Image 1: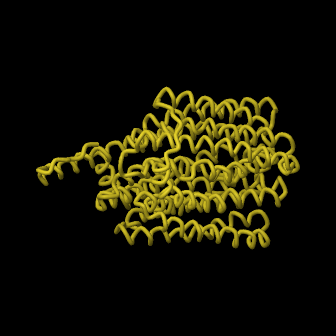
Image 2: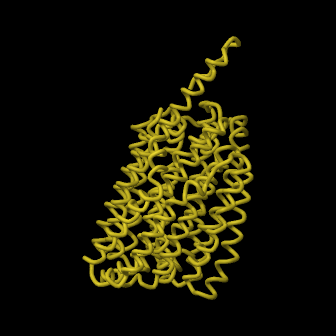
Image 3: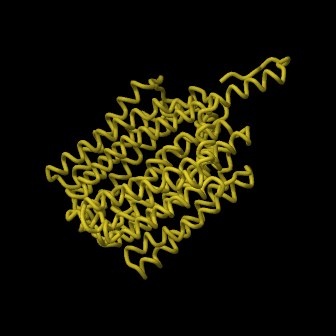
Length: 497
């Protein structure tokens, strides 16, 4: 990126450079989003196939063991960064070598601290008491993946700042292909939850190797006080928001895993894991692109407004039919496939978790926007609200509805996702309803058709496939009726230079 520096630079030249930069950002963002979605489409197919096999090979207890251990690690992830990576990405000026090396050094120290904390946790015996020795090995494999992951952080930041997302996705593809291949093979061999330990370590090693090939950087250790001070000024608030998110999710689910029977927690883990697939396919990929992109656009509110609205439009366009399809057809799926019958008690949780994602598809890009433009205090407020609601409402719902109360609470809390819309509107005059109502109408038609034909879809696998294909076809057909002009304009906007 080049900025004019001479005093006699004309306004026209400055404007031309600004337009050129906007075109570059737009082009890289669109390509980046396509790269991420393409990557995830591949990995989701692999992950979906793996999940189908794992649902047959693993017991609810196996899912429960992994889910319990993951919550421990998810909570400890908070201490692995202190927001330095986000600060380097959001930074308006180019980071210096000292800043990169300082961030790397701090992350290395923190990652080994996490390994030590895991050792202390294991010494208490609480993990063994809940999961047996298998949980110990899975937890250790996750712990040692932290020091390895820090080796990828700085190269990832460099690629993000360049908006070079097409390269950034390659390590993730290799990691997930390695992970699922080993996991399914060992599960098939009857290894149970222990298969996760081998798959996790293999994934970590392959990710580092691929990243070093794609984006090498000059390793160095440094603890520059000035650089650390600059990064922490933003990073601490970012990390505090992340901490609240982890208290809301990982810590709370860890508590659930401890107090609920392992089978019931396995049902929750299964339902939540499957419900996250649409989110990971669409929202997560767009968020990976929008944070660095929105950070670059924070000085141009009109361009930022258009970018936010396009993000919301295309995310909801893609995710709404997937969410509806999953919610409608989960019942016939577990009915016609005998090996899935064991998951019938988790159907209500699955549907509610899945529908909750619909709100997240709108709120997540907006929370991301607040962070990208430096309004981290608003992000903190939102996380505080959602954390309190989760810890207060969920126990009440569990008391009334049992383990399904977790998903019921999540569904209720999801409706507070209108708050990020209000916060963002204080800074940018975005239009949300205009960019989602057509998708809602089409998804509603799709859902109605799926429910009406439920007696047919429950009969056998052939009828189930017919129902899924028929309902899926109704979504684009309805969109052509109610929103073809809007879709044409939005797609044309992506192509324009």
